[in-house]
Each structure stands twice: as structure tokens, then as C-alpha cells.
Length: 92
Image 1 (cartoon, rainbow, N blue to C red):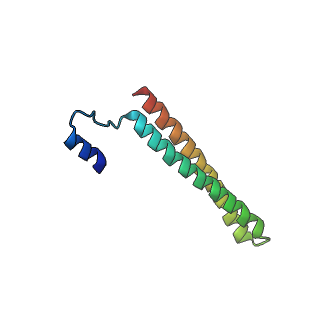
Image 2 (cartoon, one colour):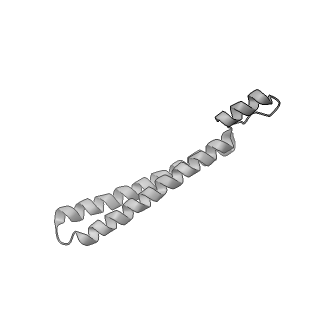
Image 3 (tube, rainbow, N blue to C red):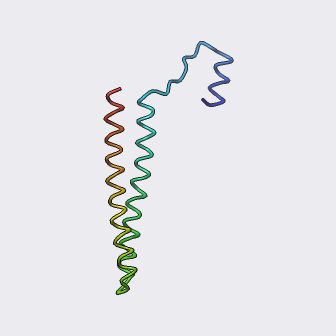
């Protein structure tokens, strides 16, 4: 609750209180999932760049491939988590 909201409640207590229900939680979680998804895509791009730049060094190539694979797995986990959260919140 913000200070402005508290001040208005003190001055005029008839103002209805702000509720933090399932829809607000869903909005916040969707923003978090979007940020995490963007970071995962960024990591895929960085891994691809490292793969291109690595040349013939086998250690760098395998590290770049792992980075891409782990980022793709992370993106899949984020998508599944977002689906589960949205499904559960819709059922509330």
C-alpha cells in the first residue's frame, strides 16, 4: 500500500480499499515471465554469437552449445510455468 493511499484513507476513510486479488497476481507474474523469457532469448543469442566466434576450439564450441541448450530448456520451463500459473489463477 502506498503512502498516498494511506494518506487518502486517513483523510477520507470512505474510499474503498485496493485489493490484491488473483488478477493482480497474474499481471505481476506475467511481467516476471516476460522479463525472464527475454533474458532467456538474449542468452540464446549470446550463445549463438559465442558459437560463431569460437572457431575450431572444441572447448568453446561445447560451452556455446551447452549455453544454447540450457537457455532453450530455461525458455521451455518459463513457458510451462507461465501456463501453469495462468491456469491456476483462472480457476480461482
